[in-house]
Structure formats: structure tokens, C-alpha cells
Image (cartoon, rainbow, N blue to C red; front, side, top):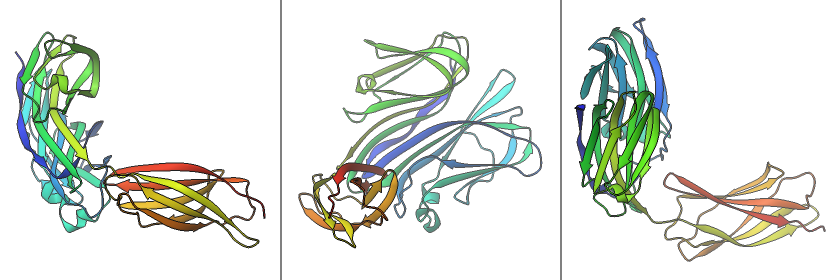
Length: 340
């Protein structure tokens, strides 16, 4: 029979852009005085935008049931005590799942102004600890995005031959389902919805994404020899108004003393990008940059970008870059430069 628990920790809809990352770490925190681990979470972090939902999750293995530690995110204390949400004793070790709501931390003026999420753990007593993995789920406030999220979190141990079943996972018909699990050694896992199944090999931290066919029923079976720890089940649907720019015309501006490009740009998307930039490249070297104000949907704008080059090339690459929320897109256009 499986040991531990996976339970619903969030269910709702937000005007927000959803991002999540699960990273295997395997870093040892020793009993040495001042043992510290610093980790920058590899996730988009738009500057000046508040978070509507933010959860930090840590998987930790210890030799004793208790250690003394402190956790900080962007310099703010998240926890001064070791308080796991779930702990399991297995193979002479203790495996713990710690869950922190860090929304208020990310919404401090200092964090809102930063372009990253940085975590620090200081080990201050007790036995050695191994930080096995980090999970981070965040939804950034955005009027042009709509997210539906249902998150189950905890720690559930499946030994050989054991299985775990869930039903009615999704709030939205187009949702995708993510399964996050950890196995210390290779093991075979089968994911089934009653009519179809997927078999995979799990080793270390895995994040497997399934389509909406698994929303109604999801059964997870451990068919290998190594234990499998189920950490997260997420169902999510994100709808975003697309920002899309297109170069519609390029005219080289060539004189004896000046070289530039007159560029017409159209907005063929549903909304305005947050930022847009024109870059001129010559064999990989940047020869000109121009920040521009994007046109509204259906509109156009004309810009002239100057080119700094000692020699006049036969052709150059014009790159149009635009950013919306935490997503960046670009278009490259090859431009022939006429001789004077």
C-alpha cells in the first residue's frame, strides 16, 4: 500500500501567465558551521509584475528526522524552522517534502524590481541533509492571459507493484497534465487512463506531460525495483493573447557618409508587445540597434536604424525582436545593400 499523501493545494482561475520548473539538485548540506546553499531558480521573472500565486517546493533527504535550517527567497526569510508537509522513512533515511507559499515574498518592492528568483538555505544543526530537488510554480499577473490551475502536492511512495489512481483532475477541457516524481534508481512507470497508457523509465527527477485524455482518470503504477516518490500532479490551461510583429518593408538608406535601414513594421497579433527592438547584424556582429514603440494591433510604424560599419557589406541581417510577458519572439530578414 502506498505511503504518504498527495492532496489538492490549489484550484482556481487567474488573469495571469503561468510558469513552473522542477529541477534535480542533489546538493549536500553538512553539519559544518555555516553550511549554505544558494540557487537561482531558472524561471522567467518579468520586472515590475506582481505574482498572484507562487509556491516553492523542496524534496530533502536526511539521516535524522530533524535538522535546523533557514530558507530565504530573494533575501527574505521564508522559514526559520524545518517543518515538512510530509515525511516518509525509507531505507534507513527520512525523505521530506517542504511546501512554502512565497507569493508575499515575491510581491515585496525589492523582489518585484528583480529579474530573478534566488533561494538560499542555511544549515545550522542536526544531521547532514541532501536537497534532492526544487519545484517552483508561479503565476504572474497579466490582463492578456487567463490561467486555470489545479495543483496536487505532497509526497507519496510507490514501491514495486504499487499504484496510485486519481480522477477528475482538470477544470478546463483543454488542460494538460504534468506528473512530477523522483526515483533514486531506474524504475519502470506506467501511466494509464483506462483506454490508453504510456510506459517510461524514471531515474532521478522526472516531469512527464500528458494531454487532456488523462484529465478524467489517471493511474500511475511502479513496475520496477526502485521506489518512486510522487511529488506533484498539475493540470493547467493557459490562454494568452498573442503579440506578433512583422517586417513589411525595408529600404536601405545609402549615401557617401551614411548607411541605414528604413523599416516598416506591422502588428499582426492580438495585443501590443511589452518591448520591441530592431537589431542589424553583419556576420554575427551587431552593427545597429534601435528600440521602438510597437504599433497597436492592425497598425504599422516606420523606424530608421543607423548602421555603424567601417566597410559597406553586400548584405546584412535585420532582426526584429519583441517580448510579451516572459516570452520572446523574433523575425530575421536578409537585406541587400546597394552600392552608391
